[in-house]
Length: 173
Image 1: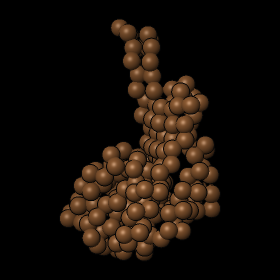
Image 2 (image 1 turned 45 degrees about the vertical axis):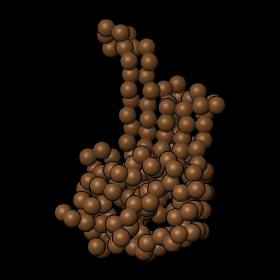
Image 3 (image 1 turned 90 degrees about the vertical axis):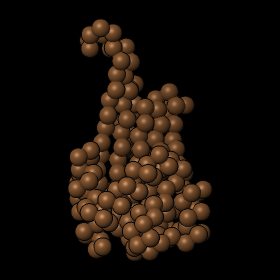
């Protein structure tokens, strides 16, 4: 499947949940598209005016197609996250979690060394006020259509099944 077709198919699936901007540049890095989503949950007594608890979560999604994933590419993603985490985290009294999710479409399968780096060495989390004002984390999802594989880091584990279903849907319309 061509890169452009893959990107468009993914946008069609994600646009029901995310506001999409394409193309997108952040900190001098180019991405094929960017999507953002936020959710606010609250608890209240009897009436919505008597709210006693609320929290917000934010997800920022960055998509890029590459021919292969290298160690330097992964290091750049981690460096970028450390550079922009405070910009994309909207920390206030209701902030619970911000995820910077990188979805990478790789034309080539990952080597065992790269798989190990993704799983073990590409984890990043930042706590705000010792976690009292929430946290922000890096989630990485690498989609490899040629082998129908989805690789994720520690914080991307919860999304692996969803992205495996999305990949299958794109490959078998």
